[in-house]
Image (cartoon, rainbow, N blue to C red; front, side, top):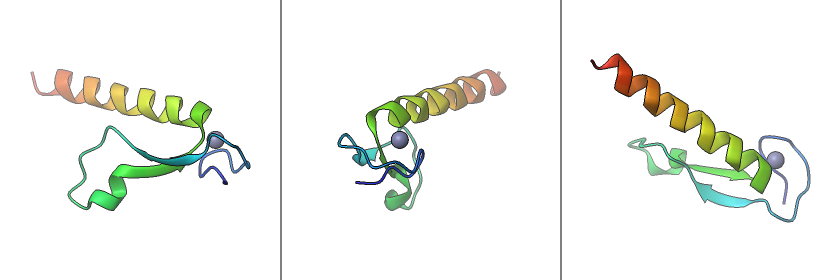
Length: 56
Ligand SMILES: [Zn+2]
């Protein structure tokens, strides 16, 4: 399967649920390989952190 982030054919690529909370549930899924998904999760972690600090 082809990863949406690195555009490479990788065995580990699959549909995964991300750490997002879109109303449209299809947007909460990405098709990525293991390596890219780690980065995606880190990105959202950071986004949530920033949002938390922003609310103070
Ligand atoms: Zn990838």
